[in-house]
Length: 236
Length: 236
DNA sequence: TGTACATCAGTGAACGCGCGTTCACTGATGTAC
DNA sequence: TGTACATCAGTGAACGCGCGTTCACTGATGTAC
Image (cartoon, rainbow over all chains, first blue to last red; front, side):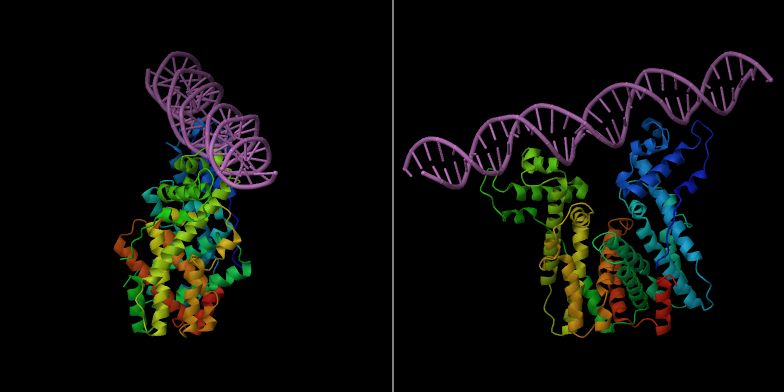
Protein backbone atom coordinates (compact mmCIF):
# COMPACT_ATOMS: atom_id res chain seq x y z
CA UNK A 1 0.00 0.00 0.00
CA UNK A 2 1.19 3.49 -0.73
CA UNK A 3 1.90 5.59 2.31
CA UNK A 4 -0.97 7.53 3.84
CA UNK A 5 -0.98 11.29 3.84
CA UNK A 6 -1.97 13.57 6.64
CA UNK A 7 -1.43 17.18 5.82
CA UNK A 8 -1.87 19.93 8.36
CA UNK A 9 -2.20 23.10 6.39
CA UNK A 10 -2.16 25.15 9.55
CA UNK A 11 1.38 24.19 10.46
CA UNK A 12 2.71 26.50 7.78
CA UNK A 13 0.96 29.66 8.84
CA UNK A 14 3.29 30.35 11.74
CA UNK A 15 5.81 32.00 9.45
CA UNK A 16 5.94 35.69 8.58
CA UNK A 17 4.05 37.19 11.50
CA UNK A 18 2.69 40.69 11.15
CA UNK A 19 1.89 42.53 14.30
CA UNK A 20 -1.09 44.47 12.94
CA UNK A 21 -4.79 43.91 13.37
CA UNK A 22 -5.16 40.35 12.29
CA UNK A 23 -1.54 39.54 12.81
CA UNK A 24 -0.91 37.47 9.73
CA UNK A 25 -3.75 37.93 7.31
CA UNK A 26 -1.76 37.25 4.18
CA UNK A 27 -0.72 33.87 5.44
CA UNK A 28 -4.15 33.13 6.85
CA UNK A 29 -5.70 33.84 3.46
CA UNK A 30 -3.27 31.55 1.69
CA UNK A 31 -3.96 28.81 4.21
CA UNK A 32 -7.70 29.26 3.81
CA UNK A 33 -7.31 29.22 0.02
CA UNK A 34 -5.28 26.01 0.19
CA UNK A 35 -7.98 24.45 2.35
CA UNK A 36 -10.60 25.51 -0.17
CA UNK A 37 -8.58 23.88 -2.95
CA UNK A 38 -8.12 20.80 -0.81
CA UNK A 39 -11.75 20.37 0.19
CA UNK A 40 -13.42 21.89 -2.84
CA UNK A 41 -11.55 19.78 -5.31
CA UNK A 42 -9.14 22.15 -6.93
CA UNK A 43 -8.08 25.63 -7.93
CA UNK A 44 -11.54 26.72 -9.10
CA UNK A 45 -12.59 26.71 -5.45
CA UNK A 46 -9.99 29.36 -4.69
CA UNK A 47 -11.73 32.75 -4.69
CA UNK A 48 -10.93 35.93 -2.83
CA UNK A 49 -14.40 36.08 -1.36
CA UNK A 50 -14.38 32.50 -0.11
CA UNK A 51 -10.90 32.80 1.42
CA UNK A 52 -11.87 36.05 3.17
CA UNK A 53 -15.10 34.49 4.40
CA UNK A 54 -13.16 31.54 5.79
CA UNK A 55 -10.80 33.81 7.72
CA UNK A 56 -13.68 35.98 8.92
CA UNK A 57 -12.64 39.11 7.13
CA UNK A 58 -14.05 41.39 4.44
CA UNK A 59 -13.12 40.59 0.82
CA UNK A 60 -11.68 44.08 0.56
CA UNK A 61 -9.14 43.28 3.26
CA UNK A 62 -7.56 40.72 0.95
CA UNK A 63 -6.63 43.51 -1.43
CA UNK A 64 -4.20 44.83 1.17
CA UNK A 65 -2.16 41.66 0.56
CA UNK A 66 -2.86 40.59 -2.99
CA UNK A 67 -3.17 42.80 -6.06
CA UNK A 68 -5.89 40.59 -7.49
CA UNK A 69 -7.32 37.11 -7.62
CA UNK A 70 -4.50 35.76 -9.76
CA UNK A 71 -1.95 36.68 -7.10
CA UNK A 72 -3.85 34.82 -4.42
CA UNK A 73 -4.09 31.80 -6.70
CA UNK A 74 -0.36 32.01 -7.41
CA UNK A 75 0.43 32.10 -3.71
CA UNK A 76 -1.88 29.15 -3.14
CA UNK A 77 -0.12 27.24 -5.90
CA UNK A 78 3.16 28.01 -4.17
CA UNK A 79 1.80 26.67 -0.94
CA UNK A 80 0.57 23.52 -2.67
CA UNK A 81 3.98 22.96 -4.26
CA UNK A 82 5.53 23.37 -0.83
CA UNK A 83 3.19 20.81 0.71
CA UNK A 84 3.80 18.37 -2.12
CA UNK A 85 7.55 18.74 -1.67
CA UNK A 86 7.27 18.15 2.06
CA UNK A 87 5.23 15.05 1.46
CA UNK A 88 7.78 13.68 -1.01
CA UNK A 89 10.66 14.48 1.27
CA UNK A 90 8.93 12.64 4.10
CA UNK A 91 8.52 9.62 1.83
CA UNK A 92 12.22 9.80 1.03
CA UNK A 93 13.29 10.02 4.64
CA UNK A 94 11.14 7.08 5.63
CA UNK A 95 13.47 4.71 3.75
CA UNK A 96 15.78 2.39 5.62
CA UNK A 97 19.41 2.93 4.63
CA UNK A 98 20.81 0.58 1.99
CA UNK A 99 24.51 -0.15 1.62
CA UNK A 100 24.86 -0.88 -2.06
CA UNK A 101 24.92 2.53 -3.75
CA UNK A 102 23.09 1.39 -6.87
CA UNK A 103 20.34 -0.17 -4.83
CA UNK A 104 20.18 2.94 -2.70
CA UNK A 105 19.85 5.22 -5.71
CA UNK A 106 17.17 3.04 -7.29
CA UNK A 107 15.38 3.03 -3.98
CA UNK A 108 15.43 6.80 -3.78
CA UNK A 109 14.10 7.06 -7.31
CA UNK A 110 11.25 4.77 -6.37
CA UNK A 111 10.53 6.71 -3.17
CA UNK A 112 10.35 9.99 -5.04
CA UNK A 113 7.97 8.50 -7.59
CA UNK A 114 5.91 6.93 -4.87
CA UNK A 115 5.72 10.22 -2.99
CA UNK A 116 4.60 12.05 -6.11
CA UNK A 117 1.83 9.53 -6.73
CA UNK A 118 0.64 9.18 -3.17
CA UNK A 119 0.38 12.95 -2.80
CA UNK A 120 -1.68 13.17 -5.98
CA UNK A 121 -3.94 10.40 -4.74
CA UNK A 122 -4.35 11.64 -1.18
CA UNK A 123 -4.72 15.33 -2.04
CA UNK A 124 -6.23 15.63 -5.52
CA UNK A 125 -7.40 19.18 -4.91
CA UNK A 126 -3.92 20.38 -3.95
CA UNK A 127 -2.31 18.34 -6.70
CA UNK A 128 -4.56 19.98 -9.32
CA UNK A 129 -3.71 23.34 -7.83
CA UNK A 130 -0.01 22.70 -8.35
CA UNK A 131 -0.67 22.24 -12.05
CA UNK A 132 -3.35 24.82 -12.71
CA UNK A 133 -2.67 27.19 -15.58
CA UNK A 134 -3.81 30.24 -13.63
CA UNK A 135 -1.89 31.84 -10.80
CA UNK A 136 1.45 33.36 -11.61
CA UNK A 137 4.18 31.74 -9.57
CA UNK A 138 7.31 33.66 -8.77
CA UNK A 139 10.42 32.43 -10.59
CA UNK A 140 12.34 32.12 -7.38
CA UNK A 141 9.70 29.85 -5.92
CA UNK A 142 9.90 27.42 -8.81
CA UNK A 143 13.66 27.20 -8.49
CA UNK A 144 13.90 26.62 -4.77
CA UNK A 145 15.94 23.48 -4.27
CA UNK A 146 14.32 22.31 -1.11
CA UNK A 147 10.75 21.10 -1.19
CA UNK A 148 10.52 21.39 -4.94
CA UNK A 149 8.97 18.21 -6.35
CA UNK A 150 10.52 18.74 -9.75
CA UNK A 151 14.03 19.25 -8.44
CA UNK A 152 13.67 16.05 -6.47
CA UNK A 153 12.97 14.12 -9.64
CA UNK A 154 16.10 15.55 -11.24
CA UNK A 155 18.26 14.81 -8.24
CA UNK A 156 17.15 11.19 -8.11
CA UNK A 157 18.26 10.78 -11.73
CA UNK A 158 21.58 12.49 -11.10
CA UNK A 159 22.19 10.05 -8.27
CA UNK A 160 21.58 7.18 -10.65
CA UNK A 161 24.33 8.54 -12.89
CA UNK A 162 26.71 9.31 -10.01
CA UNK A 163 26.36 5.78 -8.79
CA UNK A 164 27.17 4.31 -12.18
CA UNK A 165 23.82 2.73 -12.94
CA UNK A 166 22.63 5.18 -15.55
CA UNK A 167 25.02 5.94 -18.40
CA UNK A 168 25.58 9.69 -18.75
CA UNK A 169 24.49 9.40 -22.38
CA UNK A 170 21.14 8.07 -21.19
CA UNK A 171 20.72 10.83 -18.63
CA UNK A 172 19.73 13.38 -21.23
CA UNK A 173 16.02 14.12 -21.20
CA UNK A 174 15.47 11.21 -18.84
CA UNK A 175 13.75 13.64 -16.49
CA UNK A 176 10.98 14.16 -19.00
CA UNK A 177 10.43 10.43 -19.37
CA UNK A 178 10.40 10.01 -15.61
CA UNK A 179 8.23 13.01 -14.89
CA UNK A 180 5.81 12.17 -17.67
CA UNK A 181 5.38 8.57 -16.54
CA UNK A 182 4.71 9.53 -12.97
CA UNK A 183 2.63 12.60 -13.79
CA UNK A 184 0.63 10.75 -16.43
CA UNK A 185 -0.28 8.01 -14.00
CA UNK A 186 -1.30 10.58 -11.40
CA UNK A 187 -3.54 12.35 -13.91
CA UNK A 188 -5.12 9.19 -15.29
CA UNK A 189 -5.87 7.80 -11.83
CA UNK A 190 -7.59 11.09 -11.05
CA UNK A 191 -9.35 10.97 -14.42
CA UNK A 192 -10.42 8.24 -16.83
CA UNK A 193 -8.78 5.49 -14.73
CA UNK A 194 -10.51 6.61 -11.54
CA UNK A 195 -12.54 3.40 -11.70
CA UNK A 196 -9.49 1.15 -11.18
CA UNK A 197 -9.43 -0.80 -7.93
CA UNK A 198 -6.71 0.07 -5.45
CA UNK A 199 -5.00 -3.24 -6.25
CA UNK A 200 -4.91 -2.58 -9.97
CA UNK A 201 -3.73 0.95 -9.41
CA UNK A 202 -0.86 -0.24 -7.24
CA UNK A 203 0.05 -2.93 -9.75
CA UNK A 204 -0.01 -0.42 -12.59
CA UNK A 205 2.25 1.93 -10.65
CA UNK A 206 4.79 -0.82 -10.07
CA UNK A 207 4.57 -1.89 -13.68
CA UNK A 208 4.96 1.69 -14.85
CA UNK A 209 8.02 2.34 -12.75
CA UNK A 210 9.59 -0.98 -13.75
CA UNK A 211 9.01 -0.17 -17.39
CA UNK A 212 10.68 3.14 -16.81
CA UNK A 213 13.58 1.54 -14.97
CA UNK A 214 14.16 -0.97 -17.75
CA UNK A 215 13.70 1.71 -20.34
CA UNK A 216 16.20 4.15 -18.89
CA UNK A 217 18.87 1.44 -19.06
CA UNK A 218 17.90 1.05 -22.72
CA UNK A 219 18.58 -2.57 -23.55
CA UNK A 220 15.19 -3.72 -24.74
CA UNK A 221 15.40 -2.97 -28.43
CA UNK A 222 17.86 -3.79 -31.17
CA UNK A 223 19.68 -0.82 -32.66
CA UNK A 224 17.68 -1.31 -35.80
CA UNK A 225 14.34 -1.25 -34.01
CA UNK A 226 15.36 1.75 -31.99
CA UNK A 227 16.27 3.69 -35.11
CA UNK A 228 12.96 2.88 -36.69
CA UNK A 229 10.98 3.83 -33.62
CA UNK A 230 12.80 7.14 -33.38
CA UNK A 231 12.15 7.90 -37.03
CA UNK A 232 8.51 7.04 -36.67
CA UNK A 233 8.18 9.29 -33.67
CA UNK A 234 9.62 12.15 -35.64
CA UNK A 235 6.96 11.62 -38.29
CA UNK A 236 9.34 9.92 -40.80
CA UNK B 1 8.35 17.79 -37.01
CA UNK B 2 5.12 16.42 -35.73
CA UNK B 3 2.30 16.51 -38.22
CA UNK B 4 0.19 19.65 -38.41
CA UNK B 5 -3.42 19.62 -37.43
CA UNK B 6 -6.30 21.25 -39.17
CA UNK B 7 -9.59 20.50 -37.58
CA UNK B 8 -12.87 21.51 -39.12
CA UNK B 9 -15.43 21.28 -36.40
CA UNK B 10 -18.23 22.00 -38.83
CA UNK B 11 -17.72 18.81 -40.79
CA UNK B 12 -19.33 16.83 -38.01
CA UNK B 13 -22.53 18.75 -37.75
CA UNK B 14 -24.07 17.24 -40.87
CA UNK B 15 -25.26 14.21 -38.92
CA UNK B 16 -28.58 13.82 -37.16
CA UNK B 17 -30.67 16.36 -39.03
CA UNK B 18 -33.86 17.57 -37.45
CA UNK B 19 -36.45 19.09 -39.71
CA UNK B 20 -37.81 21.62 -37.20
CA UNK B 21 -37.21 25.32 -36.87
CA UNK B 22 -33.47 25.47 -36.69
CA UNK B 23 -33.03 22.14 -38.31
CA UNK B 24 -30.27 20.76 -36.14
CA UNK B 25 -29.95 22.88 -33.03
CA UNK B 26 -28.60 20.15 -30.78
CA UNK B 27 -25.72 19.52 -33.10
CA UNK B 28 -25.17 23.20 -33.74
CA UNK B 29 -24.90 23.82 -30.01
CA UNK B 30 -22.37 21.03 -29.56
CA UNK B 31 -20.33 22.38 -32.45
CA UNK B 32 -20.46 25.89 -31.01
CA UNK B 33 -19.48 24.54 -27.60
CA UNK B 34 -16.53 22.66 -29.10
CA UNK B 35 -15.41 25.84 -30.83
CA UNK B 36 -15.65 27.72 -27.54
CA UNK B 37 -13.49 25.07 -25.89
CA UNK B 38 -11.08 25.19 -28.81
CA UNK B 39 -10.72 28.96 -28.94
CA UNK B 40 -11.33 29.79 -25.30
CA UNK B 41 -8.75 27.36 -24.01
CA UNK B 42 -10.77 24.58 -22.49
CA UNK B 43 -13.95 23.29 -20.91
CA UNK B 44 -14.51 26.31 -18.67
CA UNK B 45 -15.38 28.27 -21.82
CA UNK B 46 -18.28 25.92 -22.49
CA UNK B 47 -21.45 27.56 -21.18
CA UNK B 48 -25.04 27.23 -22.28
CA UNK B 49 -25.34 30.96 -22.74
CA UNK B 50 -22.21 31.31 -24.84
CA UNK B 51 -23.09 28.35 -27.06
CA UNK B 52 -26.62 29.68 -27.61
CA UNK B 53 -25.22 33.14 -28.35
CA UNK B 54 -22.84 31.64 -30.90
CA UNK B 55 -25.65 29.84 -32.70
CA UNK B 56 -27.89 32.91 -32.54
CA UNK B 57 -30.53 31.42 -30.33
CA UNK B 58 -31.97 32.07 -26.87
CA UNK B 59 -30.33 30.23 -23.93
CA UNK B 60 -33.71 28.75 -23.14
CA UNK B 61 -33.76 27.02 -26.50
CA UNK B 62 -30.79 24.90 -25.43
CA UNK B 63 -32.95 23.37 -22.71
CA UNK B 64 -35.03 21.67 -25.40
CA UNK B 65 -31.94 19.57 -26.17
CA UNK B 66 -29.96 19.34 -22.95
CA UNK B 67 -31.30 18.85 -19.44
CA UNK B 68 -28.64 21.12 -17.98
CA UNK B 69 -25.16 22.51 -18.41
CA UNK B 70 -23.48 19.25 -17.48
CA UNK B 71 -25.18 17.45 -20.36
CA UNK B 72 -23.96 20.00 -22.86
CA UNK B 73 -20.45 19.67 -21.47
CA UNK B 74 -20.67 15.89 -21.69
CA UNK B 75 -21.75 16.07 -25.31
CA UNK B 76 -18.91 18.48 -26.02
CA UNK B 77 -16.48 16.09 -24.39
CA UNK B 78 -17.84 13.35 -26.62
CA UNK B 79 -17.27 15.53 -29.64
CA UNK B 80 -13.72 16.30 -28.54
CA UNK B 81 -12.98 12.60 -28.07
CA UNK B 82 -14.32 11.98 -31.55
CA UNK B 83 -12.10 14.66 -33.05
CA UNK B 84 -9.07 13.38 -31.20
CA UNK B 85 -9.74 9.87 -32.46
CA UNK B 86 -10.10 11.11 -36.02
CA UNK B 87 -6.84 12.95 -35.75
CA UNK B 88 -5.04 9.88 -34.45
CA UNK B 89 -6.56 7.67 -37.11
CA UNK B 90 -5.38 10.09 -39.77
CA UNK B 91 -1.89 9.92 -38.34
CA UNK B 92 -2.06 6.15 -38.48
CA UNK B 93 -3.27 6.04 -42.05
CA UNK B 94 -0.54 8.40 -43.19
CA UNK B 95 2.09 5.71 -42.64
CA UNK B 96 3.76 3.98 -45.58
CA UNK B 97 3.28 0.22 -45.44
CA UNK B 98 6.15 -1.80 -43.91
CA UNK B 99 6.75 -5.47 -44.71
CA UNK B 100 8.36 -6.74 -41.54
CA UNK B 101 5.49 -7.28 -39.10
CA UNK B 102 7.47 -6.29 -36.00
CA UNK B 103 8.61 -3.07 -37.62
CA UNK B 104 5.06 -2.43 -38.78
CA UNK B 105 3.65 -2.91 -35.29
CA UNK B 106 6.29 -0.68 -33.71
CA UNK B 107 5.57 1.91 -36.36
CA UNK B 108 1.88 1.85 -35.59
CA UNK B 109 2.57 2.23 -31.88
CA UNK B 110 4.71 5.25 -32.63
CA UNK B 111 2.08 6.74 -34.93
CA UNK B 112 -0.61 6.38 -32.30
CA UNK B 113 1.60 8.05 -29.70
CA UNK B 114 2.56 10.78 -32.13
CA UNK B 115 -1.09 11.41 -32.98
CA UNK B 116 -2.00 11.66 -29.31
CA UNK B 117 0.73 14.20 -28.68
CA UNK B 118 0.24 16.27 -31.81
CA UNK B 119 -3.47 16.58 -31.09
CA UNK B 120 -2.76 17.75 -27.56
CA UNK B 121 -0.27 20.27 -28.87
CA UNK B 122 -2.34 21.57 -31.77
CA UNK B 123 -5.65 21.67 -29.91
CA UNK B 124 -5.00 22.23 -26.21
CA UNK B 125 -8.53 23.48 -25.58
CA UNK B 126 -10.11 20.36 -27.03
CA UNK B 127 -7.54 18.11 -25.38
CA UNK B 128 -8.33 19.59 -21.98
CA UNK B 129 -12.01 19.12 -22.71
CA UNK B 130 -11.46 15.41 -23.31
CA UNK B 131 -10.04 15.09 -19.82
CA UNK B 132 -12.24 17.49 -17.87
CA UNK B 133 -13.83 16.08 -14.75
CA UNK B 134 -17.21 17.65 -15.48
CA UNK B 135 -19.58 16.51 -18.19
CA UNK B 136 -21.03 13.06 -17.87
CA UNK B 137 -20.12 10.94 -20.87
CA UNK B 138 -22.33 8.07 -21.88
CA UNK B 139 -20.84 4.65 -21.26
CA UNK B 140 -21.47 3.57 -24.81
CA UNK B 141 -19.51 6.52 -26.14
CA UNK B 142 -16.41 5.66 -24.13
CA UNK B 143 -16.50 2.10 -25.42
CA UNK B 144 -16.90 2.82 -29.10
CA UNK B 145 -14.14 1.00 -30.90
CA UNK B 146 -13.72 3.41 -33.76
CA UNK B 147 -12.34 6.85 -33.12
CA UNK B 148 -11.64 6.13 -29.47
CA UNK B 149 -8.14 7.31 -28.60
CA UNK B 150 -7.86 4.93 -25.67
CA UNK B 151 -8.87 1.86 -27.65
CA UNK B 152 -6.27 2.76 -30.22
CA UNK B 153 -3.55 2.63 -27.60
CA UNK B 154 -4.71 -0.83 -26.52
CA UNK B 155 -4.88 -2.11 -30.06
CA UNK B 156 -1.35 -0.99 -30.82
CA UNK B 157 -0.10 -2.97 -27.84
CA UNK B 158 -2.10 -6.04 -28.83
CA UNK B 159 -0.49 -5.89 -32.24
CA UNK B 160 2.93 -5.88 -30.62
CA UNK B 161 2.02 -9.12 -28.87
CA UNK B 162 0.42 -10.69 -31.95
CA UNK B 163 3.56 -10.00 -33.91
CA UNK B 164 5.78 -11.62 -31.33
CA UNK B 165 7.68 -8.56 -30.17
CA UNK B 166 6.02 -8.11 -26.81
CA UNK B 167 5.89 -11.18 -24.56
CA UNK B 168 2.30 -11.86 -23.42
CA UNK B 169 3.57 -11.72 -19.84
CA UNK B 170 4.73 -8.16 -20.45
CA UNK B 171 1.45 -7.14 -22.02
CA UNK B 172 -0.33 -6.89 -18.69
CA UNK B 173 -0.83 -3.28 -17.58
CA UNK B 174 1.42 -2.12 -20.39
CA UNK B 175 -1.42 0.13 -21.52
CA UNK B 176 -1.14 2.15 -18.35
CA UNK B 177 2.60 2.63 -18.84
CA UNK B 178 2.06 3.64 -22.46
CA UNK B 179 -0.91 5.88 -21.80
CA UNK B 180 0.75 7.52 -18.81
CA UNK B 181 3.96 8.25 -20.68
CA UNK B 182 2.17 9.82 -23.59
CA UNK B 183 -0.47 11.58 -21.50
CA UNK B 184 2.08 12.84 -19.03
CA UNK B 185 4.18 14.39 -21.77
CA UNK B 186 1.10 16.02 -23.27
CA UNK B 187 0.13 17.51 -19.90
CA UNK B 188 3.61 18.72 -19.04
CA UNK B 189 4.14 20.35 -22.44
CA UNK B 190 0.84 22.17 -21.86
CA UNK B 191 1.93 23.01 -18.32
CA UNK B 192 5.24 23.46 -16.52
CA UNK B 193 7.27 22.45 -19.59
CA UNK B 194 5.47 24.92 -21.83
CA UNK B 195 8.71 26.89 -22.02
CA UNK B 196 10.57 24.09 -23.84
CA UNK B 197 11.63 24.90 -27.40
CA UNK B 198 10.03 22.90 -30.18
CA UNK B 199 13.33 21.08 -30.73
CA UNK B 200 13.64 20.02 -27.10
CA UNK B 201 10.01 18.99 -26.99
CA UNK B 202 10.47 16.79 -30.06
CA UNK B 203 13.64 15.29 -28.64
CA UNK B 204 11.94 14.59 -25.33
CA UNK B 205 9.06 12.87 -27.11
CA UNK B 206 11.42 10.60 -29.00
CA UNK B 207 13.38 9.89 -25.85
CA UNK B 208 10.19 9.17 -23.93
CA UNK B 209 8.87 6.75 -26.50
CA UNK B 210 12.24 5.02 -26.82
CA UNK B 211 12.42 4.64 -23.07
CA UNK B 212 8.97 3.13 -23.17
CA UNK B 213 9.91 0.82 -26.04
CA UNK B 214 12.98 -0.41 -24.23
CA UNK B 215 11.08 -0.67 -21.02
CA UNK B 216 8.22 -2.75 -22.37
CA UNK B 217 10.73 -5.35 -23.57
CA UNK B 218 12.09 -5.36 -20.02
CA UNK B 219 15.75 -6.20 -20.38
CA UNK B 220 17.37 -3.22 -18.72
CA UNK B 221 17.55 -4.37 -15.13
CA UNK B 222 18.88 -7.45 -13.42
CA UNK B 223 16.31 -9.64 -11.72
CA UNK B 224 17.68 -8.49 -8.40
CA UNK B 225 17.35 -4.82 -9.24
CA UNK B 226 13.88 -5.32 -10.59
CA UNK B 227 12.74 -7.01 -7.41
CA UNK B 228 14.13 -4.22 -5.30
CA UNK B 229 12.52 -1.54 -7.41
CA UNK B 230 9.16 -3.27 -7.24
CA UNK B 231 9.37 -3.60 -3.48
CA UNK B 232 10.30 0.02 -3.09
CA UNK B 233 7.39 1.08 -5.24
CA UNK B 234 5.03 -0.87 -3.04
CA UNK B 235 6.32 1.02 -0.03
CA UNK B 236 8.55 -1.86 1.23
C1' DT C 1 6.08 58.98 30.25
C1' DG C 2 2.48 61.42 27.61
C1' DT C 3 0.39 63.49 23.76
C1' DA C 4 -0.41 64.52 18.50
C1' DC C 5 -0.25 62.79 14.36
C1' DA C 6 0.79 59.82 10.41
C1' DT C 7 0.27 55.35 8.75
C1' DC C 8 -2.13 51.67 7.12
C1' DA C 9 -5.07 47.29 8.06
C1' DG C 10 -9.63 46.25 7.75
C1' DT C 11 -15.00 47.83 7.07
C1' DG C 12 -19.40 48.38 4.67
C1' DA C 13 -21.81 49.32 0.79
C1' DA C 14 -22.08 49.12 -3.82
C1' DC C 15 -21.05 48.32 -8.94
C1' DG C 16 -21.41 45.42 -13.04
C1' DC C 17 -20.79 40.87 -14.89
C1' DG C 18 -22.01 36.33 -16.76
C1' DC C 19 -23.80 32.46 -15.29
C1' DG C 20 -27.69 28.49 -14.80
C1' DT C 21 -32.30 28.01 -14.74
C1' DT C 22 -37.53 28.88 -14.84
C1' DC C 23 -41.82 31.00 -16.39
C1' DA C 24 -45.63 31.93 -19.35
C1' DC C 25 -45.71 32.74 -24.07
C1' DT C 26 -45.63 32.50 -29.45
C1' DG C 27 -45.49 30.65 -33.64
C1' DA C 28 -44.12 27.11 -36.97
C1' DT C 29 -44.65 22.24 -38.23
C1' DG C 30 -46.96 17.78 -38.73
C1' DT C 31 -51.20 15.10 -38.81
C1' DA C 32 -56.09 13.46 -38.52
C1' DC C 33 -60.10 13.81 -40.92
C1' DT D 1 -56.63 18.95 -51.37
C1' DG D 2 -58.11 21.76 -47.39
C1' DT D 3 -59.02 22.77 -42.73
C1' DA D 4 -58.65 22.22 -37.34
C1' DC D 5 -55.94 21.02 -33.98
C1' DA D 6 -52.12 19.04 -31.33
C1' DT D 7 -47.36 19.16 -30.80
C1' DC D 8 -43.26 21.11 -29.65
C1' DA D 9 -39.09 24.25 -30.93
C1' DG D 10 -37.74 28.58 -29.80
C1' DT D 11 -38.82 33.59 -27.42
C1' DG D 12 -38.45 37.23 -23.93
C1' DA D 13 -38.26 38.54 -19.46
C1' DA D 14 -36.88 37.61 -15.15
C1' DC D 15 -34.85 35.31 -10.81
C1' DG D 16 -31.02 34.63 -7.67
C1' DC D 17 -26.20 33.60 -7.30
C1' DG D 18 -21.26 34.35 -6.42
C1' DC D 19 -17.82 36.49 -8.33
C1' DG D 20 -13.88 40.42 -8.83
C1' DT D 21 -13.16 44.89 -7.82
C1' DT D 22 -13.66 49.89 -6.20
C1' DC D 23 -15.09 53.63 -3.11
C1' DA D 24 -15.00 56.53 0.86
C1' DC D 25 -14.62 55.37 5.50
C1' DT D 26 -13.06 53.90 10.45
C1' DG D 27 -10.22 52.69 13.84
C1' DA D 28 -6.05 50.52 15.67
C1' DT D 29 -1.00 50.75 15.72
C1' DG D 30 3.58 52.92 15.67
C1' DT D 31 6.39 57.03 16.12
C1' DA D 32 8.18 61.82 16.67
C1' DC D 33 8.65 65.08 20.03
